[in-house]
Length: 115
Image (tube, rainbow, N blue to C red):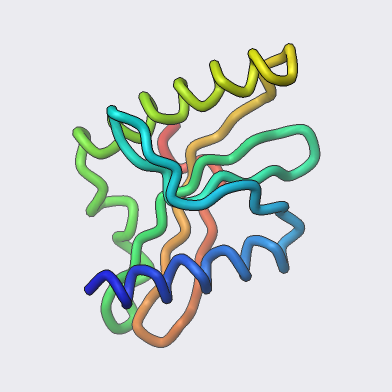
């Protein structure tokens, strides 16, 4: 299953690059959770959760993210932003997003999924 996840994350990262994002980091772990992909577009940072779904199941990718998972992603993003602020001296606009991939390799990017 992890191999499928790695494959999905690679496809997600490549698609984000094609859409004008710069992928800064992948699989960033904190004690409170993990962020699959951290990307930048313009002056904004994006924290993406990658969801690989079965055949033709792009719709519903957000629905499978539990409240607990959202909370962990938010906490991890907050820690990353604190680290970023110390390094850069500012906090950028930040968004929590989802990259959904179906069994056919179709990709949907939802840039502000949790708001």
